[in-house]
Image (cartoon, rainbow, N blue to C red; front, side):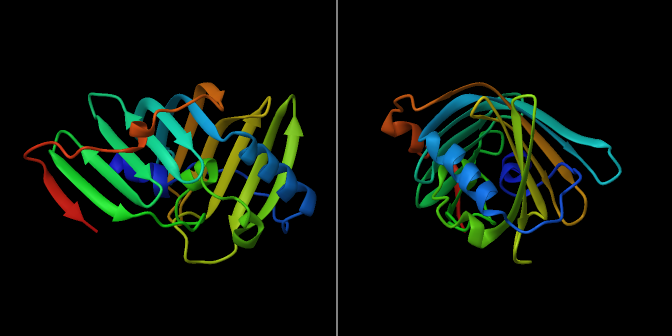
Length: 207
């Protein structure tokens, strides 16, 4: 389930600004995130190692809803699915016929997906935040305040008030870029979108 796990804890390098969280930056990022109570769209994801060599590339669709609900689906041929009901995260790998279920870690520094779907009221407690704006695009650079994190740096970019891309870098320099397309906000979402029925005969792993 490598592709799915990368969304939770991997990376794309960028030149991080070294500054402590500015109250205006925090307020603006919080406002942009909370503005979208639901999100639907497509994504393309590319992962590179520390030398810039491409490791993986994928495409798929995502649906998110606050607080903490998300459905992240990677298209075939490397199909995978990650579903959160706000308490548990289910990872489904149809090739392996394997389901992995684990408790959702609510810490924003542990699960970048929660920045788009979770409670961001304590975002300034978790990150130092800086921002810059050019040509209608606002970039926020988030640096975790603690070492107990799954990534070293995170950048969120918004275009016209909607998430445009996400870039992450981990502590070994592995990088991931996620570009979102066709994003719509605050559209109704069926409740079963965030529920997963375990297929008959699948191996189930509880973590």
